[in-house]
Length: 262
Image (cartoon, rainbow, N blue to C red; front, top):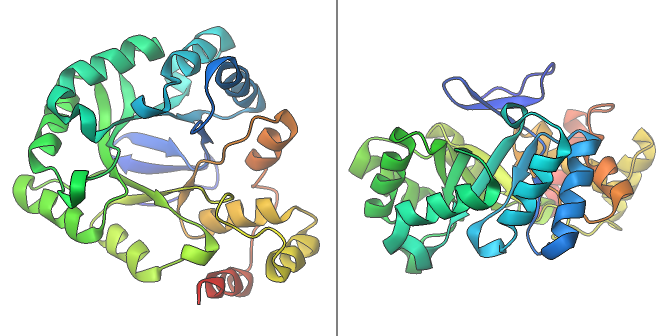
């Protein structure tokens, strides 16, 4: 079921596989900074890490997890397969596992469809990787609903997750509903990067709750059942981005933010 639980703040993306609703994104963080930021995130309480082969930071993320003292089983790890590795699917996941220092990832995504092709053959190989125990769940990123339909038609299986750019100005109820109708959990990236945090609507709502506009945007994701993976290299901001459960938006406030897309 696609339900966010109030007690654990997770969403079930496949039977018996809960995914934390708030994760730590690592795009454009590399080298020692990726290690330091990921360690800070784990210390702050994040239990969901998002990386990708093309980010070139899997080794630093993996080292941070290994050094953190947090049990591997308590952390949800996502990485992604880029189109330039579609011909080396099994080799790519094995390289990712070595870099991350884990024996399996919790979610492996096709990073984006190459030239608009949904990649039915690649999707079949991801299913094989999952059956081999190297990934607990599989999904896609940057996919349109019709591309998801092509995967379903060919294999009878929908992706567990579709990770897409999601921010108030990009809000699209049809996109959200289209994914959910197919049993696909929506995960949003660049939620803060694509938002105008000085917008009067966000400022007013934030003031009313005693939080920041950034926290309002992130909480808005949760109100829609959208997983969110904010990124920062600053410890205070990393902690702030996780502090989303001490307040909730009213339906009216959520609707006002939705309307920013019009």
